[in-house]
Image 1 (cartoon, rainbow, N blue to C red):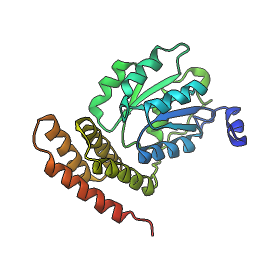
Image 2 (cartoon, rainbow, N blue to C red):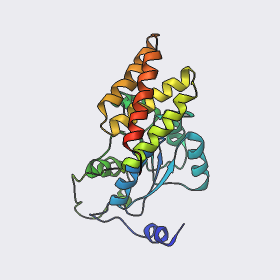
Image 3 (cartoon, rainbow, N blue to C red):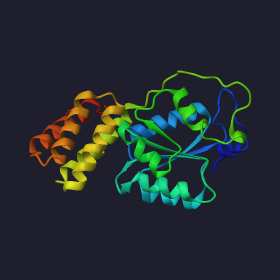
Length: 238
C-alpha cells in the first residue's frame, strides 16, 4: 500500500466523493470495462483492485477484504455467479456485492446467486454507479449530509478497447473449440456494447445465436476475424 492509499484508507466519505475510503474489487476480464470502473471509482473517491478471472479474484481475497466487490458474470475460467454465491455466504460478509454484465437478462441470475444489486454495461454515469453501491452500504459508510447527485459521464481510454480486441483476435486465431467460441462471442458482444460498436456487437451475437442453434458458424467466424483486423488497424498507435 502506497502513501496515497494510506491517506485514502483513513479518510471518511464526503458528499462530493461518497465512496472515499472504500476499496472496490472489480472482477472483470475486459480491460475497457475495467478502465471505465477505474474512472468511476477515481471520481467517487474509492480505491480499485482488479482481477481478470476467478483465480485472480481468489488470490486478491486471500490477501485483503474489500468493501465492495463487482463481479462480471462471464469470466474466462468460470461463472461469476459462483463467486457471488461464495462471497454472499461468507462470514463476515462483504458489505456490497454487485453482479455486472452486458446482458441485462442476467440480472436474475446474479440476484439468485446472492448479489445485492446488478449493473448493466456499459456503466458510464457517475451518479448511477455511486447509487448502486451506496444503496447497499451500512449507515456507517454513508457520506454525511446531503449527497451531490451527478449525471456526469466518463469515457474510457480507447486504447483499452484495442487491447480487448487484440486479446479476442488472438484467441480466435487459435481455432478455438466450442466453449472458447462461446466465450469469444460473449466477450466480444460485451466489449462492443460498452464501446457502442453496433456492427461488432451484431456479429458477435450472430455467432452466439448460430452456436446455440447448431447452425454453421464458419461465416460468423470469418466475419468477426475481419472486423477484428479492421478495428486493430483503426486504433493502431502511430
